[in-house]
Structures are given as C-alpha cells and as structure tokens.
Image (cartoon, rainbow, N blue to C red; front, top):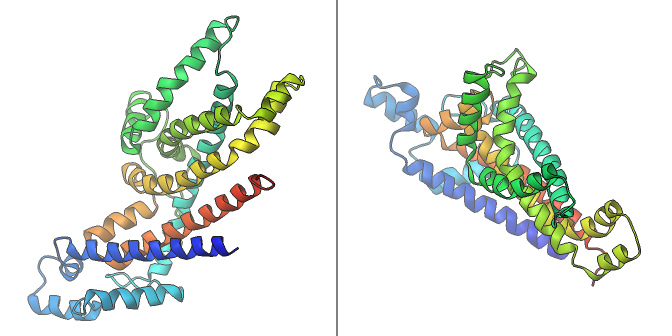
Amino acid sequence: MIPFARLLVRRIALLIALLATVFVVVDLLPGNTARAVLGRDATPDRIVAKERELGLDRPLPERFWDWIAGVLTGDFGHTARGRSINELLADKFPPTLLLGGLALTLAVVASLLLGIWWAARQQVAPSATVIRQGAVRLLQPATTIAAAIPEFVVATLLILVFALAAGWLPAVTITDRSGFPASPDMLVLPVLALAIPQIGWNTRVVRAAMVDAAQAPHVESAVLDGISTRTVLLRHVLPFALPTIVASFATTVGMVLGGSLVVETIFNYPGLGAVLAGSVADRDVSVVASVVALSGAVIMCVLAVADGIRAWSLRGRG
C-alpha cells in the first residue's frame, strides 16, 4: 500500500507540474486574451478593464494558485467569455470519451487477437497454407507502418479513400440535439483513425510479450505434457505476458486522448478538440489547463487500474 501511495503522490505532483507548465506556455504565446475576447476594434481602455476583470493584471503564480485551489474543490472556474468551465467540460467531454472509448476497445481487442495469433505462429510450418504464411509475414511490415503513421495522416487517408473516393462514409460529423454524432456511421472513420496506429504498436507489444513468456520452463513442460496449444497460450503464457501488455494498453489511453484532440478537429467532431483549439486561439489558459487536468485525471485512473492488474498477475511470484 505504501509504494502505491508514493506512486500516486508522485503522479499527482507530475500532473501539477504539467499544469503549471501549461500556464506558463499559454501565457508566453503571442496575443492578448482580452483583445481576443473583445475583438480587434476594442479600445485600450476596454482591454485594460477586461484584463482587470479576468485577473490578467495579477502575477502568473497567483493566478495559477487560485485556479488550482478551485480545482481541488471541483470548480474549474470560468472561460474568458464568461461560461462555466464545469458546464463546458460536462457538455464536450462525453463525446470525446465515447470516441476514445470505442477506439481503445477496438485497439485492445484487435491487438490481442493479432498479437496472440502472431506469437502462436512465430515459426510458420512448411505445411502451412500459402495464405497463412503470407498473413504471418505481412504482419511485420504492416504493424510497423501502422504504428509509425500519425493519427492525422491516417485520418486524411481514410477521408480520401472511404469518403471522397468511395463515398461510403461521411467525412464530417453532424451533431443532433444531444451533442453527439447524428448517426453511428459518423464515428467509423474517427475511431479507425485513432485505433489503427495503436493496433500496430500494441500488436507488436503483445506478440513480443507472448514470445518472451513462452520461453519459461513451465511452458515447455506444459507442451511436453500434451496440453493443447490454445490452453498453453491462455493459461500458461498469457498470464506471464499480462504485465507488459497491460502497461502498453495503459499508455495507449494517453495516446488515444491526445490523438483524439487532433482527429476531432479533422472530422469536425463535437468534443474537447474544438474546445482546446478555441481556448488556445483566445489564450484562455484556464480552459487549456482544465482540459489537461481532466485528461490527466483519466489517465491516472487507468494507470491505477493497470497497476492493480499487474499486481494481481504477479501474485505468488518470487
């Protein structure tokens, strides 16, 4: 319990340091928050009055302290345009969570299936079919390419092929009254754009972890005892590979959340991506920091779950 508590405190400290860095970076950006809110025609007197109203005339450390104190009580404050940040996040975070959750689920399921299948056929038998041999050999370059291509490039290619050329799926997202996409097919391309790079990376991780775990002596004994390949993989190999796999999936959560902000902008998806883009344009540091804080809190929760799964999988080992 003590090591876990120390790890939690360390992660919280890192998150606070990251939020402080966000405050500094946004404050150093060219432009003026008050002018961005009031428009180019605002007089100097109005700009000064707006800066005083927003507290921009105070030192940056004091503004950060006031904001972080409010966050600890559940109050993220207000945007430079006067809207409650709590309401803004409550309105825009669920669509982002839906998009990221679907992409993460697809990435986990696909990479597990592909990685385990790849590891089981590490050595392709000469008697294997041509199709099976080709599929195994194709995974090496395919996963490398998928993992190397950024989400925005994948999104652009998907739009070109499936939206513009084939016309099968919409290239932009239209929302209904609930604030979510009006039809399920509008989620397909954004989800794929987020999931494909993570499938490529995690498939390689799963395969490597399974191959390493298969070298354990108890696995060889299970094979010599005549236990079926499926049973050996699921009961004797996968549990030993689980800590590495879970750690990779936990890292994927942060990658998906970060990538979703870019993908949402490309597909005009109604999530935190548009909020973040608008807040950066307004130099609204409170909104930017709030998005980072919320994303960081989600990632910390996932890491805590991953730590629990890892501890469970390592129980009883010396």
